[in-house]
Amino acid sequence: MMKLLALAATLVVCTSALQRIKLESIHEGKDARPYFAPSAAAESLAVRRGWKKPARTVTKGGEFVYSLPLNDFEDAQYYGTVCIGSPCQKFKLLFDTGSSNVWVPCKGCPFTDLACQFHKKFDCGSSSTCQATSQKFAIQYGSGSLSGHVDYDRFCFAEDGSTLCVAKQGLGCATSEPGLAFVAAKFDGLAGMAWDSISVDQLPTPFGQLANTTSCPSSVFSFWLNRDPKTYATKGGELTLCGTDASHYTGNINWVGLTDKTYWKFNIDSLSVGGTQYLGAVGAIADTGTSLLVGSKDVIGKINAAIGATPVANGEFSVDCSKLDSMPAVNIAINGVNYALQAKDYVLQVSQFGQTICLSGFAGLDLPNDPRFPKIILGDVFIGRYYTVFDWGKERVGFATSKYS
Image (cartoon, rainbow, N blue to C red; front, side, top):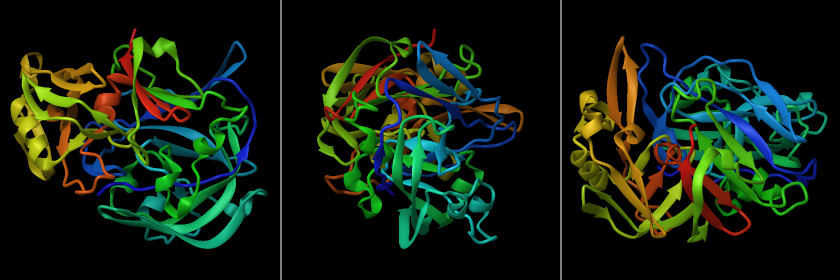
């Protein structure tokens, strides 16, 4: 089911200039197998286990850079640490361009709620700036609903609370979390980065409140996701706030305008494999909250057949790991520019019981037959190959080839 909406806040100008947050990636344990659970925009979130190296902060020419390095073991999910409350309560959040709410586990959740018990819990009573409410909060996922209440507090993208802050952010304080997906997740909650129009309870997003201010005059944020662990063994990726980082991409950024301000939704020109077109001009979204590339079951089934993938359990498709070099490119045309995904981009190599299996990065889902929803979801399989820029001010999305050297 589509992941809808996100949360709110009021703006406070803390500091200016380009801000960068280093992202962690979730890794696969030796004998753990990824499962595909509701990942906001689609039920295709690959959650993995992993280990963490120490965080570090760096100042470059007056620019604050916050980095949480972690090996990008199997191109899984990405998250960073933020500050909520006064003093700071640090939470690991998935920055999700496919939803528009901020939520975190809440103190006082039932002991039987394993997802809550296994993660950091927000304590409104320990924050001098928190405004508690009895307003109910709920988001429906494919495997159940996340529910709780709304609290308001200070939210900062920097984990030390030094920069890019909003004074009164609406937080979904979750006392019930659905399914095993959130039990295994290494992140505590989500920070929605889509548009306020799809926010549950019409709560504005943190970046939406910062956009077009003296703190963030460019109103742009961008994602670089590490898909080359041999080159960047300790980096999961980077979220750049209020600008782009030219060191992470090559060539020019190709821009495409949004078709509406809900998700980051735009039109692709086509999707083809080996000269056969499987989609024409249809709506798409760029979604950092979805690990895979997701479409309708019939279209994705044809794409998986074209690349030589065969169905396995739970809607997954596998490929022969020995044939990666001969597998065809999947071509997605956007605003007249072709974006090719090679097998190394769209195949997930997963360790299972001491062996490596190869899974297709294309997943089928029964998407709603509604013009508001996209026909194709470009998740991390695509964003990892192509540096993705979200321009709030000019209402557009941009893509460029990611750089790993």
